[in-house]
Amino acid sequence: MQHLLSVDDMSEDFIHEIWTNALNNKDNISTSLSGKILTNLFYEASTRTSSSFYSAMTRTGGSVIPINNVKFSSVTKGETLEDTIIAMSTLSDCIVLRHPDTGSANRAAKVSSVPIINGGDGEGEHPTQTLLDGFTIYSNNNKSLDNLNITFIGDLKNGRTVKGLVKLLSRYKNNNFNFISPESLKLPSELLPSNSIESENIENVIDKTDVLYVTRVQKERGSDHDYSLSLEKLNLLKRDSIVMHPLPRVNEIPREFDNDKRAKYFEQMRNGLWCRIALLEKIILG
Ligand code: NCD
Image 1: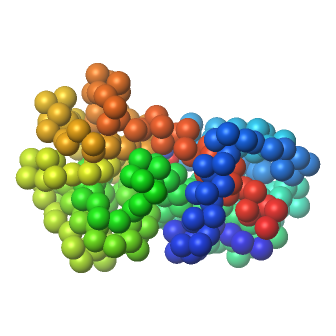
Image 2: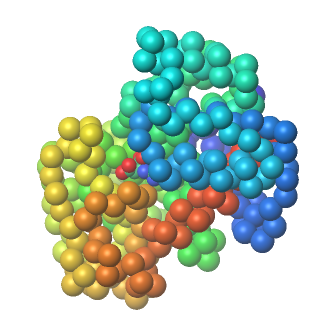
């Protein structure tokens, strides 16, 4: 049984198999997961991740038990995460868990009799977002994740998506990292790759950036800051750069930029569907 708790659980071969199958899924979806059941267990807000798993599972013939609002579940009666996981693993073939506590997916995996997919654990990781983020770069960059100048901006301390993508891109060759945030929202120093620049403003790096990865300030995790990139600033990007955002956006990127061919944030969502179909097939069918 294979859990997906962290980017560390995904070997290069595993990732390439998922991405190859994701490319195939774009043209040809089968009913491979017919008769299989996924539990979507979400203790924290989600639109994209829960719906993307729902769509992936049902498009391939499977079904979903949606527990998207734990206010109406036994959690309010005091049930522990462990007991909820044991209960749901008797009813389903896989569980996607989103939870506000870092490390909760690992706790779940210890008691589950079915695979656990970490759908975001507090300020920890969100490995399926990393899969789709990596795939978005891969499919926009001639199937390569080498030789990139990548700029992360926003809440690098509390956002989990940046942490996973930095881990993934650090495995490839010749990547340079720029981390732009106020002092209070810096990436934890133990996660900084050796070849990185940290700064409070983007001006010095924006015109060299190949991939701009924009993130939301995580107010629900205590961050208190606001920022938005102006159209003028975004237009300093090279013509062949790409702009990514895991979404939801608040006001980091102006809506007027959405039609720019460098804007890839809605494409990321579409890619998420293809990647999650491939992932569920791999994890549930083996
Ligand atoms: C991200 C998350 O939940 O970590 N959203 C997502 O899954 N697409 C980013 C965020 O909430 O800011």
